[in-house]
Image (cartoon, rainbow, N blue to C red; front, side, top):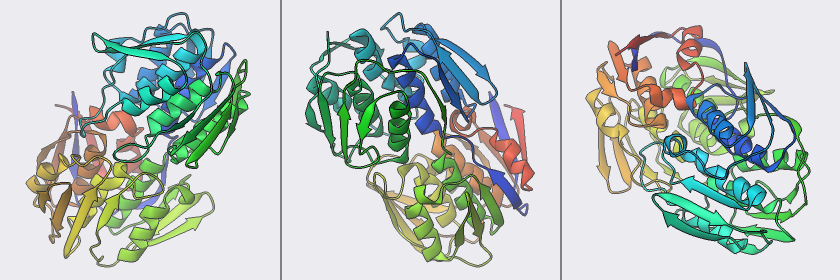
Length: 419
């Protein structure tokens, strides 16, 4: 395994480019199972997760060719069984369930894995496919579903903590080949769902309302191949904005969609960060002491849970007290202990974290527990006094493309070494 070694306190300045969206790419790659045509997908980030999905598609019978950031997928799925060894490493791979069921009439998919950030049930996925007329059961840790032909239906996909992005993606994909009309109420509104809807429509699907709480799908007999460019990763962009604020820097975040980050931009502006849309980019400047501010995470368009840890790293060095509450994943606070190892003063109170800002963080050996916690530790390491060693950075490689190289380009001293 590898680790990051970061020498903190280096001034950051310049341009940093956002890669394609990981969370949009995974369901779009899975949706290629719905067609026998050729799908060319551009701006695909080269990440552990996207490469795992490509491997999974190959095991299902698809031909996958990778050239730089372009993935070309062709051929037909010839098995409905998704490999446990691949699905268990990444929750996003569970979104092959809907496409396999719609295309082959059956699916055998392992219960999903991924980051350890709290309970993430699959009840909404099952509720959705059952509403489409499928039968489903559990056997040996797998979900086994079947349906000779899916039938359109109206359903409500709201859950305890709001809507589910992957459940919406699974049902929306499956409904494209169902008989009749499907209406999803309380659908996820995330930009990743909007991306998926645009992609499916380019294949010949008939979807309306994608990116809103009410999605209407008119089933078609067949989907075709297509060519599509992935949108930029809003969570990576948000991570860079928070990083610039923490480092008191002037950075142009290239190919960052301002409209995907309203909740974050509003919060940063309110605490004293200068955030401005600059064409297809975002300019962030921060030269003064910031004010503390509370956040509560919610499904889109609320403050993203995937930026909660990074925001906590910023508040850890912001004078005053802030309260961070996660309503999406209430147990997503494993980064608290590692930030405290660096001198932060954070304590947990049920589903919230109370952060008392300190003047300085100090370099220390820390352990990455999950993808976004890893990003928070990178932010902390960049602004800390001394050297920080971040272990288990394979989490980072799941969601941030060549992060160390991008940081070096704006002045950071980051080294990737063997543990």
